[in-house]
Length: 596
Image (tube, rainbow, N blue to C red; front, side):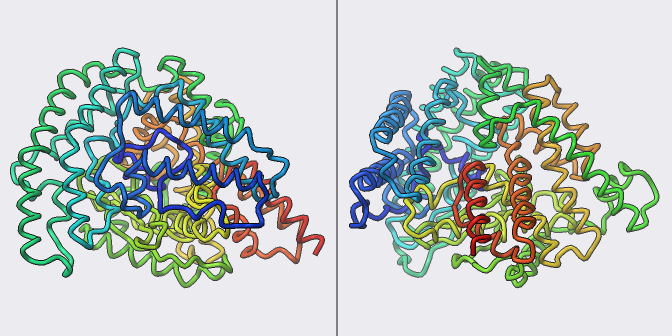
């Protein structure tokens, strides 16, 4: 999963056209562009800068420090202004003559239009009235610190400014939550019951124990000792006198006023205009026009296929018993688990290092940007997923990071480490994002773009590349790959089941545990994630199936001239795009290879 946990904790920009980063190169710097292309790139640059201003957290995540002293304005007037900005941008785009653009710039035009059109379509569902979830929100604003660099005094001063501004952000969120109650737009209570404990972690008696204090616990050598003491004293004062009281008030509001008014149901279909909303989300996340019922049936077919493969592994290892008993064995036998968080982190780091030298077997182009392995912050670990990826900064000032969950090591089996690392690190998310930053002449929104079906589809496809890399010699690791493949197939069934077919949370949990050996902690967190972000989980398997289909199409068309490394590099060469765009690109690549 891409960095959604941390980005959820940073109040996301309502403009869907960009995630802020370093300033883009001037549109007029390329003299060979005609008037239409120059107008197009001026629009790209202007909208990129708008994204920087309107989403300071997004700018921070990508290494742009200009807005590190502020948060996104979450007032209703600002949200409406951002929505109007999207509508205006689309009108400006439509005024540009697409027919006068090069093939590459027509692709840029189409992807930009796709993003803007869907951003405008979703405005009517007023998602901003549900601004937090069990995975993050105003209660976990400190998560932004994971993406910040602290090398000079100004970096600390900016963080102090953000800390002082937290009460205003909380007030804005409370106003949105109250409006959501009035409109009948509230999250499921079963999810919101997790939030009070997250708020409570901000109400500390010792300021140095606050998650916001983390940058002040360690300083680089460039910060003088006298400055360190002064910054620490100021941070403790802001936490004690500003942050803690604000979060205490928010906790009282949440417990007494908001939580009792959240909804008892779980389906997106139960929200106002809910069926249309879920249909929109399914189409938006998968970048297809597949119906909920069609996706549900694809899921059932995949579940049956993968169960048959699991039966073969069970027989190979000589396990006596049925598949549910094998799942129980995989979930509980001590030999599959590390005893401490430190041991678990070391094992994840070793898995990543095992993968690195084998990458040349599946790709000719290795991205230049490095990556590292980090633990998920303790204050969000109990309520989040097994791992996620945070892309590196656009300017190269921060590497990409593979975050792993060390909470309850006894729930983190060793047999999942290889497929998980292939997905979240290399050649999964890190490859696609680092390669995207290296796209020549592409506008910044393309270089940093993210379509879930493409991105997570590639991540899930990357798990199977472990076979091509010779990493699945252990049958239990192969069972881990099948478990992860099943995990994403189950998603198609339970997500559509809960949001479109009337399934209960308990029914979804049971279907998951009956078909995959994921541990109970992970299963419950996963089901709650699908409840909280309807439709998002559909994109993984749909994207993987499309990329796998294109691989087989290429292999059959090219025969002995098919090179897996060339195919994989070609998939990544477009950057993140809708699946229909990827398919068109690969078909053109096949045709050009056949002509050659």
